[in-house]
Every structure is written in structure tokens, then in C-alpha cells.
Length: 137
Image (tube, rainbow, N blue to C red; front, side):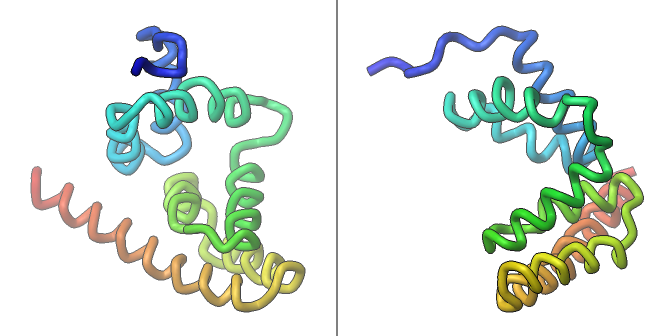
């Protein structure tokens, strides 16, 4: 059985890679880009759907990342991805915590508590990545 998606062009794959590198930075973004090779479903999301949203210039990237943190907090999804994006773009821990607190107020504090734990984990993962990169050089 073949793929349900039309073939992916190199330009589409490059657009998806470029978007992830822009949002998540060169190091963590490169790790996430490995998902492009996993299956056509990931390629569809990462090269055709996500860039249509993230490449809009109506709202600045910092605001989009903070909105994403609030949304995934409320939905009780892993906020770590977007915390790592926030770190890369210089969004302060305090700004991210404020958005998590707002999401907790509006969506339930258990979701904010989980997101706050994930924020700590994301900072630890980011620091570990930097340490690993430093030791590789």
C-alpha cells in the first residue's frame, strides 16, 4: 500500500527544515528535523502544514511561541518543545511561567503544574544539549 500523500519535493523538505531550525534553533531544531525521515505523516505535518502557520508574519515569533506554550499547557501536552524554542529566542523563564500560570487559571491548575515541571525538564535538557555540544568541540 502506498502513501496517502503526494510525493514530497526537496523544496518542501527544505522549507520544513528551515522552519524548525528558525523556531527551535540550529541544534534542537536539527534533532527535531530527524522526524522528517520517520514517515510521510511527519513529513506532511512538518513540511506542508506547520510552515503555513509558523511562516505567517501577522504575529511575531515570540508571541506565537508564548501562545503555543499556553495552548499546550491547557491541552496537557508536552510544553517542553516550545520552552526550548522560547529559550532559543531569548524568552525569559518568567515570561514563560506567566503564560503557564494564565493557562492554569483558565484551563485548570493541574495542567499548569505539569507544564511547570516540563519547563524545568526542558531547561535541563537544553543545558545538557549545550554541555554535549561543548564537549564535542
